[in-house]
Length: 358
Ligand SMILES: [Mn+2]
Image 1 (cartoon, rainbow, N blue to C red):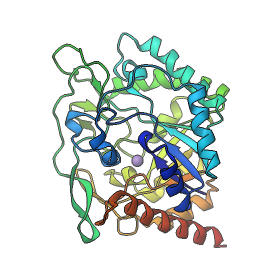
Image 2: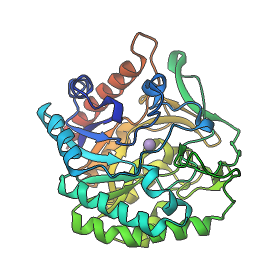
Image 3: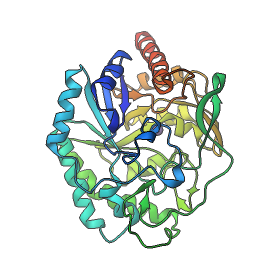
Image 4: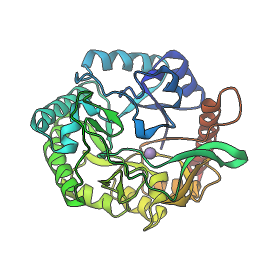
């Protein structure tokens, strides 16, 4: 098991590489999508998205992340004694019509394939994705974690505001889209779209040597913003895996999201998917409650016994990376850094301890 750390695009600099290394990380999971790209004020909040209804900013310009650009970043990462484990999320600009079954779907599947080939050439093992129309939604912010630490959660209410045309996954891909909102579709239609994506992409990922890793829905509700969700119960992950079984199609296993689900249990799910060697990498965060009433909390105060999770992973010989995902913000001059450093210290100690157990 490897201790990883997640960095957003605007954090790809020496200060943050050093911070990750100082926290004990050996591997990085990097977001190349520029959330809040047009709003510097919001950047430090990109890990705790606010104003989800208004979106997380504009999608990219439709250009792929080039091999040169990725290799340049990789070199910087390596020069700080870190390995680049995964890229997390496609830019909506290159795959909105795959999610929406729109007119550019076939053009975009070629773009996405090419992106995966580039990532393979750069030698980055994992590509995380979230096959979601609404993205993160329906959460609010409050003093939900220990000591009143600011965090996010759901308070029983689901945001059913329809998504405006030109937006998907909280990002605007077309500023000039016509008035109106996304038409309501059913779950079967969403699975059909995923099937198209996986059947086309998994063979390319196999050739490129990249492992695709699927995030579950956050929050895991059946419908959010009038759109169906894909993986909102633990069993649904199996359906996803079975669409196109391959060593290159795995899960971006988010413990928080899985524990928020109303069915099953997080230990059973961790065992089931790690036993099949389907866990690509892990979002190691804790929560209290289940949808539609849950709170994200500190890693050591939630419903999940994180040590028990690590023992299950060890038993099933999980070799991948674990990252904190989100943490509550701590009351000090650097709320995000303190929250992350706290989680990383816990994780480092817990992983070493479980590794030493016979
Ligand atoms: Mn997650």
